[in-house]
Image 1 (cartoon, rainbow over the protein chains, first blue to last red):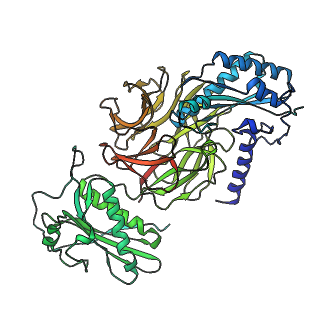
Image 2: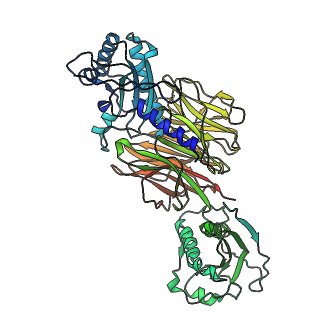
Length: 174
Length: 435
């Protein structure tokens, strides 16, 4: 491997770290622009969950994720309610952009799960657009079954891993 | 790498030249078979340098043949006869006495840089040599490959099938915790030896495939932060992104049989469709246009058809369509979900992953969907890849709560075995027989 490749891989790794943190609850607010877009990383603080304008409030009080049933990308009533809360927050905090991560549980083949995660992320994206959020503020990615949050190989973990997570970034939190 | 060359030895042996009615032959298409007992004594060193390879070569050949489940070794401790000269006559009664049916006699010469290996195969029962003797020469770093070539020649001579021992497998080497796995592209010999990693693990990589010539790999990488297809030259390790579509996640690539094109999936909005990319011209063609998930495409060996999985009927099933697109025929109709269809190199079978009632299976069916047979069952089996001769399938198995490991199974469903690797591994992609 030559130096150019190494540099590319390094850059790519940085970009990945910047825009696809699989653990949004430990996420410190980073830019959405990935490899090749040429813009830098913005850093914000999570803030106090009691501050309704904070990312911490979005994550902990509104809920940054919705869950799906097996092999489905349909929103549950709870999921719709969460997303309505997310949309309201995003309407009143227009400086933020979001990345929607679609995930699947481990009970499927790897590449199908990439496609399924993409469909879940798209479902959330379309819901938020219908709620008035500009498409230009939204990006999606699918991780398939590659980034579970719960490692156990049991239904209680699969239920948590079948998710779409809305990662807020691109702005300065209060 | 030193290129191996093969040379036929001009062998005119005086022993057993009379035509025999029943040559040694294993019919591996039959059902249950009794493994054929064979003996492979230490290869005779023909010079001082060769003495350090004689035992190792014999052990690799023995391990290869035994791993097929078709052969059983008569252990060296049981041998009566000692092979001290490559050209001395074979004492058949001594080998019959230990119940060996096949005897492999080898010899090796080596200096500081190069190695020459030769062998002859004998049918102990009828008392005659089988086929021509062969000689392989190359660099000392390729000594295992020469043992694999001996194994392939013996396997082919006895079974009438092509070999697969001198081949490599590209796979994903895994490390780290389950919720934050590091995944590196890696390559190994088919028996799990000579592992080299090809990417540094900074970017998640999944589902590699090897080009028909074995010179390139194509895989899905998250190096941009989103699924993209990378094409790597396996000699240089240089990779580049290919098949990018604005606004799409692209993944699940596979080579065409001529190596000139890729077929892959692109997720655009809520749908995932199939595309074809000409690697020479960069021209891209959409092959499917359905609101469903169409993924895991694989060409027929003649390049005329594609098999792929789609959930257009409501759950994942296997379809076949012309390689240029057009109407797709569903071929899987059993219970459960069917995924990852892969056409066999012979063209007759399609291997797949099936999940049903909480279990996962590797199976095969004919390319019209008939004669489905499940070869394995476990908590999670997925992602079959064919050995170059179409007799063996390698796949990923993950025990409940355990790490993934590579396994192989004969298409008869016999001889399920774990590929011996020290670390977790997934997504095998079997390359061609090496030249």
